[in-house]
Length: 112
Image 1 (cartoon, rainbow, N blue to C red):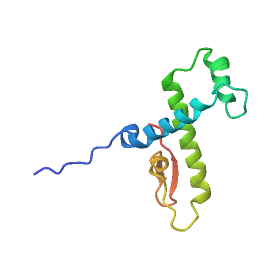
Image 2 (tube, rainbow, N blue to C red; image 1 turned 90 degrees about the horizontal axis):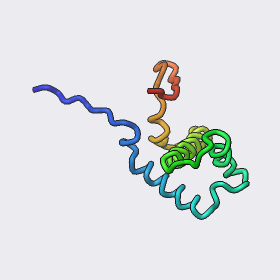
Image 3 (cartoon, rainbow, N blue to C red; image 1 turned 120 degrees about the vertical axis):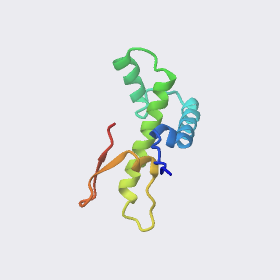
Image 4 (spheres, rainbow, N blue to C red; image 1 turned 60 degrees about the horizontal axis):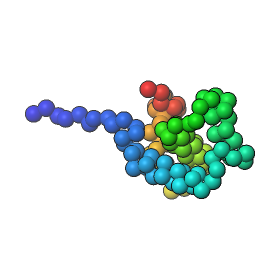
């Protein structure tokens, strides 16, 4: 009898619940604020809309920005808390890295 190999799921399917939660949380918090205000936090949206795309950002572009911002924030937390005893790494962040050198335990961002 042939052994079934484990099928690798795409990142967005593997982490669908977490991504949906991130989008919902960001969407709710940013609906309460003006995304395109002059504040330093929201200036990136102004720069993207007026300087780069020159068009209104579409919903999926905003969702992608929300997810990237969340992953970046989580990765910064990983750097700080990685040395704490008992700290579990977040799979959303660790799945974005691949081991380049197993002996040195060197990891690099997965591009593919």
